[in-house]
Image (cartoon, rainbow, N blue to C red; front, top):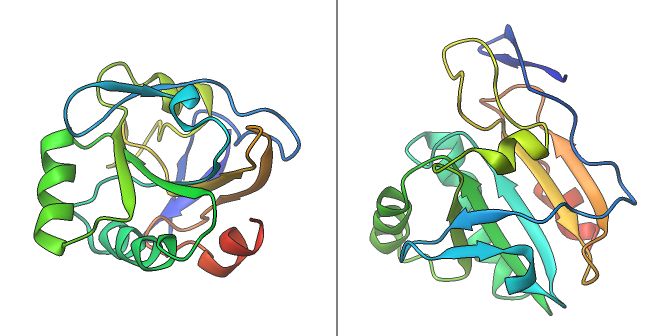
Length: 165
């Protein structure tokens, strides 16, 4: 379990992020068209998993915008923005913002992505949502970088995530 904060108040996650050097566990997440994507959909690609509580908050929206800016310039790399938001909300946000370089995925159906990767917030006002974290994997699905953001309201370290590619 990781201890993080929300507004300086302690909250906890259901576990720890995957270890650097480990294989990212397969996942089933819902795309904006309600189809299901798994890790195999991105085989051979480097992935930046931008994980956050909700696209309808300022910091989460900023992270999607910033990774969208970078994603168009990354070779053989896909940025996945993952939350428990409904796919309709994710699609609405990216459409309104004109964001086309990231792929939104939702863990709303069974929460298995959050459980498997230790991302579930288990107490506090955001209980049941995903914590703010970054997981970067190489083209073979090996985890090469992780960041569990200590204060949920803070942005992740974009530079460190992109440097891991």
